[in-house]
Amino acid sequence: MSARDAILARLRATAPGVAATSDRALDARIDTHYDTRRSQAGTAHDPHTLAHTMQAALTASHADVWCATGDAWPAQLAARLAEAGVRRLLLDPARAESAALARALPDTVAPVPFDRPIDAWKAELFDTIDAGFTVARSGIAATGTVVLAPDAGTPRTVSLVPPLHVALVHASTLHPDLHAAVHAERWHAGMPTNLVLVSGPSKTSDIQQTLAYGAHGPRRLWVVIVTDSAARPAATAREDLPQ
Image 1: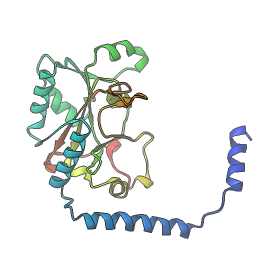
Image 2 (image 1 turned 30 degrees about the vertical axis):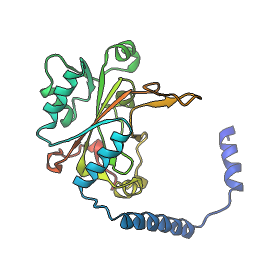
Image 3 (image 1 turned 120 degrees about the vertical axis):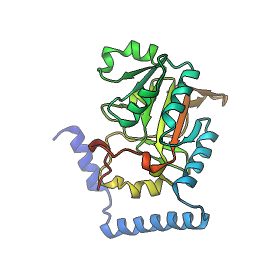
Image 4 (image 1 turned 135 degrees about the horizontal axis):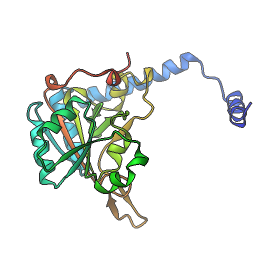
């Protein structure tokens, strides 16, 4: 038995047992709390309302947010990227949304895939990539949170290293709050290795409470909310939610 196993065994031996019925009772209390709070708020939970709630929360956190239709967003985003001086955009060409954006990009903005080990192009990545584009798994409207599930084509680096992070989220995937997201997506049935919750650009402050952006990640965050659910392509195997 390793030292780690021995420590865990002692902890488990001294931990008080919890009956399964106690777990279910606690779950029921939590569900009742959130269900009651949503009911008392009297707020509609349709995609249109959730999109505007999400937009307001993210804007309050200093993100740039706008809603667009499935047909219009690629051209709108491409134009904004060019206006912002973006020259190299990190994205996953295997995704339908990334491919649509790549087709709309002007010649001045080059799409760059993450197709090499990071050690093979670390200097290039940190020095020449202006922005990273991700497609959110879902969103949490109340807190303005973009839920990302990094994978091989879009690793965490895409939303962490470039100074500008551009996230696309479909309004049809928005949830009122975290509790609703956990239940609707059945997180308990299959959590990914790395689930990232983004609620604004990177910010920190020192002991004098001086706020600074970009110290530990992107200094700017753009979020595009696609408002017509019909425009969302079918999920690939890696995007399917647990059943």
